[in-house]
Length: 595
Image (cartoon, rainbow, N blue to C red; front, side, top):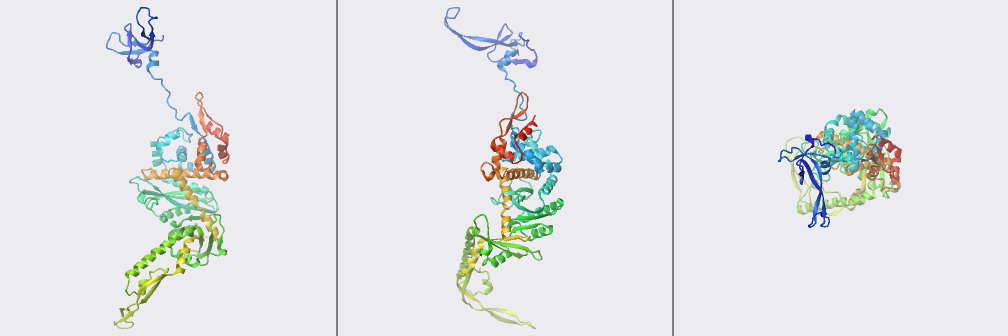
């Protein structure tokens, strides 16, 4: 029997039920045995006996009140819990597929190179990529859950960062100047050459942070009472790749936001040093004389939708509404809609260059909007009827009726002339009394032709281009501007940008960068697998493909500490990887970096 250590770290209190033998050995009962009357050595009834074991020796046999013992191995076996090893940094089974795909795509796209040049710290770049991967994988931007996610995923970083570390990193490390440099590098790398169409739009993101200047009440579509941050994106039309972004206070209008974005594009265009014609495609919220002048002066062409409340819009609509629907103006389209279009020259501001107005009439738009046109006419009708009722027997001058819309023809009768004292013409200071004719309103009737023309205008939309093109081309290019809307939808639905969750302006800009990187990766995965969706749209959405890649896991050999892929790559996983020139060997090579 090994010697019992008589040290303080081996000293324990008597367990419940312990007793002494030979005044110093401590025993406990470990089992009960029934002894029947037939097995008894002496006569009598049966009884329950006990099996006992020694668990140590008394610390001080002379002190009867001392209930401490030095334990032997039997005590530790019975009364101490088995000591478990400390948990490893990473789980024994980790997801490797999505990380392997990211490593390949970041290298080939130049994303990691531009991040490294901008931030000058490889560990910082690795954490940015891990956080962007987390946003896409978990469809969340709540960083408190990152550590738990990270322990079960292969990372670019060496360690798992806590949410406190991540908060400091986003707030203090991702500075605005470094972010701006990265935006310039990425824009320069991907702008291309020749003629490039860029789609520009903004969205608002709700935020409940207090005391942050950039968080302000604006014009949110869902709830105007909520404070928000405006987020602008410029997306390459050809493939939906995000090229740049910016954040601005929630109270800033779209027109004002556009001025900063135009300035960035102008400066970034200079940095490319190549001959590139940029055509910026925007909706009606960004058109203003200053913005158009800025683009003209910066050499940026544009394709804009004209607002219906502009005088130019009304003049152009009146000019073509009676003649646009002819077979010569018919536009061929893929959506089975009946469309007609004409192009006329115009200028957007006094002294401005010649632009081209593409006036398009759509039967689908007409069906959707004619109800609004009818309601406008009905509202004017009620206004006129109330005026007529309140003006009974009143004599009115012509100038008092100028507000009456052209939809109605007034019925009148001569009224009592109004006398007006006017200064005499010529020399002298005398006056003369002039009688002015008046009319009394007795009713009205509809101007059927004017009403029909106005309702027909409900089908119109007018696009303005700086470059000469046909109405069909303008409509086709403008119709593809929804690529930026798809980026916003992905950010809010699949990357957690429906809410910001920051407490400082610096953190807002830092988190915005990570969202931008995540949106780039999301777009690259979507665009790179477009062939797969020709025959199967269900299994090759971005969330479905991320799930497939995440299911590629590696298990740890507890004897050697090395990781090895658990299962063979499925057909679906293989098809996704093959779109980027990858196979099982690439994944296994990536797993090998874990050892």
